[in-house]
Image (cartoon, rainbow, N blue to C red; front, side):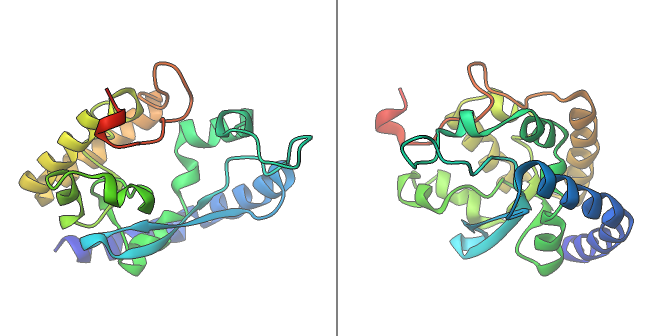
Length: 199
């Protein structure tokens, strides 16, 4: 049933959101240039790698040394707006339609994190990753990695259609209020380095 709902909702949303996706594509191209979309390999169900697609929110301009600046410096006002409104996530509707992701589930993180997870934390891959999830409506970027993973595992153990519906409605509220977008010290969630370096 969940997969059926993902297909139906993603088709409906892609149809209705296509004008917004088209308009945002033009704006991203004008403000940030090419490429318009950000593509990256992420681990999904059972750790299988897939390519996630989002609107690019960071500048690719090189510094005086010919290197990319740190992420916080690459994120300008437009990128912050895209992220705070979650509009950068719209292309992920294609990932949902393809079956790589679901609307609700643990967020797909970097594949470089895979060897850093504990055995329990790795259970977050027992379900498909989602555009939103239990951790996203309970702190999002304001909570630590440890808290985030605990909430992901809680979802794995308790997920249901009714819980997914609840998470979707709360997510809409959170997006409108722009809650939990930033960490206490940064616009960007710090890199997960494993537990030995976390405390």
